Every structure is written in structure tokens, then in C-alpha cells.
Length: 221
Length: 221
DNA sequence: CAGTCATGTGTACGATCGTACACAACGGGC
DNA sequence: GCCCGTTGTGTACGATCGTACACATGACTG
Image (cartoon, rainbow over all chains, first blue to last red; front, top):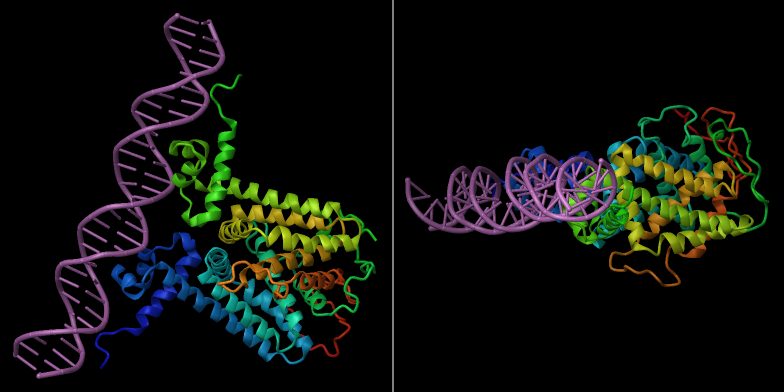
């Protein structure tokens, strides 16, 4: 029962190549041939190792979501105290989630699959469950859900709100700054005593340079 | 300058058919032939009315995002007072965004395109700008950004967190209930005592009420 | 009423796709 | 050392794709 010419790395390399190709050209542009070529394996290996593209995609995205989740766990595991946890969340958004175009693309490719096919929704379901478990080290269950959703929304909006020409936002007054993220995280992790009270929100300093192009209406109070 | 045999509906019908096909089979599965067949036009009409698939996709998703934005505007425009606005947001999430599998799928297809191609990011950018403008009728600009992101995250998580087998969550104790949504909206629209400091370049708003100790790394930008 | 040209269509071509399947290569059993 | 079964590969097939382009069609001009 020795190794024969079995190559255990082969399968993994195909999965890795699949993620690379998907990141570069999307699920739509990912073909057996391109992935095989990128992985340096013959075309026949594709059908040999994977029944079909769906199996390959499922394994690839499982690996991807696991790796992102690992970083998530690590950051939150290291945080001690609720403030450190909040800061970890901010760091996570701005360093782990927003810095990598590759991760952004892969995440959306996965979501698109999950929106249509239940098999992939299992992957997103597990991913979100793991995220909430990590947040659960520091926050109560309801807050975890809210915060997890907020993280998602902030990441997506920061990524997809960018001006098309401006691929690399680096200005200090960028609309999706760490300060805004931190403020949002602070709000969502602060249980309101009166959830729907009638108190008008505290006034925000009106002259935000980044908001100068807004025709800012006064809040109805 | 009469009509000849010009059919102005033709182009629109193709766009509508494109959205139908994309909703059913994804951008990946949408071909000129399928869309033409679904629209009841000959294949040649595709190349005649649209330079390529990208132009068709751009117009289709522009129409889609506009229609979703219209409903968004309508709900928030009708709301009077901040509580009604908050309620409108909750209704919006649970009735407009979560009820339609079609909209969910199309949204993610668009996001996936936008994550890779700047041309589509223009569409998401405009969409988000419109959403924030609608929210701006009731909330201050910073809250608008946070709330807009929260809406996004709550919608996505409610949709993609569903158990794969359970396609139609309708139980009263579902994890993503209206009550949880309302609570999250209340939190994010309730500024803490710590206002976002707009004068500082990009630092964390310093005082959170629950914060006892600030072990914060300097933000690198 | 005939000519002309913008408007719209049918078809064919080359490329690419997933997959099936015959077959090569090689380790272990006898 | 020969044989056999597992392991892996090369190739060919049918389907589908986007697009180009010759051609049909009908409205307007004179």
C-alpha cells in the first residue's frame, strides 16, 4: 500500500489554482482548461480529481472561507477586553477585508453562487456562524448578529462605493475611514436603553469636508 | 421622420429579458442566444442593439438598481419623523429586499461584476449615493453611511445565512426577525455620547462611554 | 411609382467549452 | 520477471458561444 505515483499535492494545487483563476476572471471565466493550465496539470486531471465544476467550486470556496475565518478568529481571539475587541473589528475590516482585492472578488463570487444554489449557501452559513462564534467571545448573541452584519455592510460599501477611476483610495478624508468604521462599531455594540425613543440624535459637526457635496437636509426632529 | 418599422420597445424588451435570464441562470449562464430567445427577438438583434454583452449588462443593471432605488426613495419619502423613518428602513429590509429571490440574486450578480470591473462600480456607486441621499431626508450624513451599510449587511446575512434546505424562512422565531432588525437600526441611528470628530484627520473617536481603557494601536494609514 | 438607403435578420465561422474514453505508466503480487 | 490493477493522461466529440457580414425589408424622396 505504498505511494505508487500518487501525488497528494495535486488535488490541493488544483484547488488553489481554481481560486487564482476565479479571482482573476470570475467563476464565469474559470474553465477546466484554464485552471489546469494554471495548476500545471493536464486537462484530464480535472475530471479525474473532481466530478464536475461544482465540486471543485465547493471545495475551493470552502477553503477560501475557512482561511478568512481563521484570520477573523485570530484577531478576535487575541483581543482582551471589549475595547480591544472593538478595535480588532475595525482592524479586521480595514486590514483583512478591504486590503485585498482578491478576497473581495472571491467573497462576492461566493455570495453570488450562494444566492442561487443552496449547496453554496451551506458554505456561507457556516462562515457566518463561525464569525458570530468569534464575536461571541466579546459580545452578546444579539450584538454579534448586528455587528456581523455591520462588518459585512461596511466592507461591501467601502469596496463598491469607490469611484470607478479611483481604484486605490488612500486619501485621509476618504469617506470610508477607520474613524467612521470605529464610530459605527461603537454604536452597534452599544445596547440602547431605549431602543425607539424619540430623542433626536446628537448633532454632528456640520462642516465635514467630505460631505460638502451633499445637500444636507436638516434632520426632522 | 416617421417610425419606419422601428420598434422602440425592442431594446427595452431585450434588457428586461436579460434581467430575467440573469436572475434565472446568472451572468455566467446568460448568453445572447438565451436572452434573444426569451425576448422573442432574433439573434442578430443582439449585436444590432448592443455592441457587446458588457453594454447590455450595464444597461440591465442600471435599470435594476434604479428600480430598487425608486422603491427605497418612495418608502423613505413617505416617512414623516425619525421613528417612521426607522420603521421604513425595517420594512424596506424585510419586504423589499428579503422577499424577492430575484432581487437578491441580481444584486449579488451586480456586486460581483462591480468587484472586478470599474465600469460596473459606477452603477453600485450611484446606487449607494442615491440610497444615502434618501436616508439623508431623516438622518445626518454619518448616520446615513452607517445605516446604509447596516441595511446591506442585514439583508445579505439574512439571505445567505439561511439553512440550505430552508429556502423560505417564515417562522416567527427566525434568527433574522424584524425585531432584531429594528433593534439594530435603533442602535446605529442612535449616536453615542462620542460624536465622530471631524476635525481630527483619521483618528478614532476617543471616548466611548463603556470604554475604560484605551489600548489602541496608532492607526496607520 | 421607382429608387435608395437606413433598419433589421439569418446564417455561417472559428473559438472554447465540459466530458467521455481509450490508453499509457507504474507499483506490487506471484 | 511477468502480469495485473490502480493511477493518471491525451485526444476527440458534440454543444454552445460571440460576432461578422451578406442580404432582406420597407419607408421615405423625388
